Image (cartoon, rainbow, N blue to C red; front, side):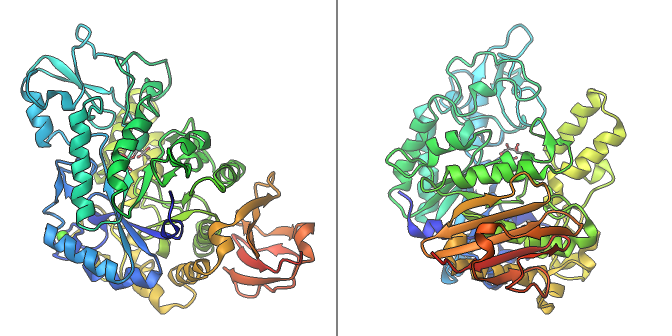
Amino acid sequence: MNKQWQKDLIVYQIYPRSFRDGNGDGKGDIEGVIEKVDYLQSLGVNAVWFSPLYCSPNVDYGYDISDYKRINPEYGTLEQFDEMVKLLHARKIRVIMDLVINHTSNEHMWFKESQKSVDNPYRDYYYWRKGKGNKPPNNWTGFFSEKAWEYDKNTDMWYMHLFAKNQPDLNYGNPKVIEEIKSVLKFWLDRSVDGFRCDVITLLSKTVGLPNGKNSIALVGKEHYVDGNSIHELLLQLKQVMDEYDCFTVGEGVLIDTTKALTYIENNEKQQLNAVFTFEHMNADNHFGIKYLMSKMRYRKLKRTLGRWQTELYGKAINTIYFENHDQPRAVGRFCSDSTYADKGAKMIAVMEMGLTGIPFIYEGQEIAMTSIKMQDLSQYKDVECLNMYKMMRKLRFSQKYVMRAIAYASRDNARTPMQWNDSENAGFGGKPWISINPNYKEINVENQEKDANSVLNFYRKLIAIRKSNGAMKYGEYKEYFPLSSKVYVYTKTYEKEKVLIVINFTSKSVSFKLPKEIRYQSRKVLINNYVGRENYESSYKLRPYEATIYSIVNND
Ligand code: TEU
Ligand code: CA
């Protein structure tokens, strides 16, 4: 059952490698986070989700784990971790760990053992199968533009990997694997972490027998590994551990819609997770759900998707809202495309996020409107997903120019450039960073924005404070107006006696606007606006570029 504190979460996501480098070796670390705990508190957030801090050879920067019970020495020690948790807790900030259990690193002891021989006790921790002649055991493909199988000559067999080949999938048909993972959960919960963000949690269960998949342009076999037969049973087993603690779980809902989502998160006795992330709104600017096949942002589709999650989960489950994370391009330049108005656009995105019902997740740098870096040279890229995509698209004869543009737009590296703290060397991040710094750090940085009362940073702070004391913003029932407009996004949210109206201009042009009739004659008050001088009484006006307003409505009935 969901608890009140879970519904009130406002989460800040830290990608540790790029947040703050305390010891000057060019990689972010726990020491760096410790330096910034007061900054985190100043934002008003009440939880931090850490992208993986565990030991990892970094093929996928922490999402390939080689030891679940140790902190990556690049980031610090367990003692430092405990210290950090204590400091965050003292500031009423909960700690959410990333839980990456669909796969391990190929350097995990379990995998190294399992590789040795067919009768090794760890063999069945993974999916090992005989090939068909010199072909893989089935036709599945994975998420990083590769076949889902890798050949290993030692035992003349193949192992499954839905992500990079250095990320072999764990076999949840094996009860021992479940026991191992339970012990991992206990380990961290006993160190007083408050929950988990569960990586690709909808992929854990695979169809028994691993049959061939249907033909598809991407992800061949997905009907056999997304939302698989035993997934709920499996998650209920893990939940037994969670239930012994006061903790929160949010799963990555890869390729599931609202109906499927409810089978994981509906607040009843079968509930396995408290919340999930949807990917659906991330596909408003691409074709076939492949973000490298870019399209213009389709705002109607965006609204439709957000609206569906608002209404279909309402009263049944906790929703989540995000516009950025470590896998996505920056929101500025994406959800508002005209960079002339980056400041207004960033604030518009903030209003959209904080106005919706559910748990907002703010990604590091989003609060200062960091932008995608748009790397020019292939050698600058670090992200295995985009490097594999590059190879595949070239093989499929997409032009060099198109592919460079596609990865510049969609590469996950865009979100992973170092946090911009100030305009000094290395943006105040620390030593010479492991990945390029966005050259715009001279203008866009925390220190500048601290000094400016009208900065994006201070706008976020204000908005978070308003949301915390406003039931309608946090939990209100959603009603949308003008759904067919691709220019404006207008909705109300109602909770008990409270009501808010959100009015957003998605364009860089001014747009004529009239309040919906229903609301026009109700008295209202501007709670926040990203321009100066929007008056309470106006009911018909010109929205300025990316203008966004939250009104509180006095319910007359
Ligand atoms: O991402 C899951 C996932 O489906 C990604 O392939 C996602 O669709 C893509 O990155 C969007 O561009 C999770 C993690 O968030 C990601 O960082 C990991 O690489 C991946 O799992 C494997 O653990
Ligand atoms: Ca460091």
